[in-house]
Image 1 (cartoon, helix red, strand yellow):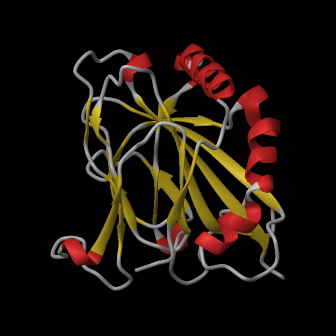
Image 2 (cartoon, helix red, strand yellow; image 1 turned 90 degrees about the horizontal axis):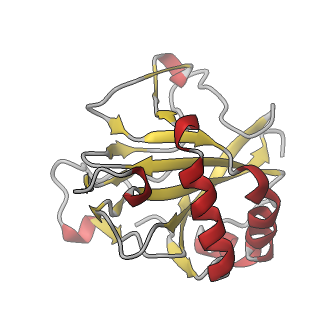
Length: 212
């Protein structure tokens, strides 16, 4: 299995609730999420067979605070991800909302192949640690949406329980793993259909210089 683990209660309850209120208020700014495709992942497109979700670039006024919390926990995050290289140069943020029927088929967070597209926050960088932060309205208005992390080399269509690890979307939890580890988001059910009842997940990608 890839190195993996969690950090619980990343934010204070007050900050988490304020973040949720802000995210709900940004509903019209969320757009359908795309996936990489083509040689080296240099293009992107909508592909509902692979991914259904809504995406928002960044977390607005909450970015400095969340960045500070992540950097405070950086030694633990690097330990969980099994990483011993140079510290990240930047952190990339992407906010996702998963409603009824939303999912993300098995994938990795960096394109692969010859002359692949770089994915870092800044030019000359690439993602190396992925961390997903969960927050949502209570009582929870959705079910499903677990993150499934696969053993290196496992076939997602044929793997057994020992070939994967499952992380339920627990309030205020950060899940950490290497960006090149294959993972999926299982299908979400959201009976009300209300945006406020969606499964909110903040993707935090730690990026390093490709020349490091």
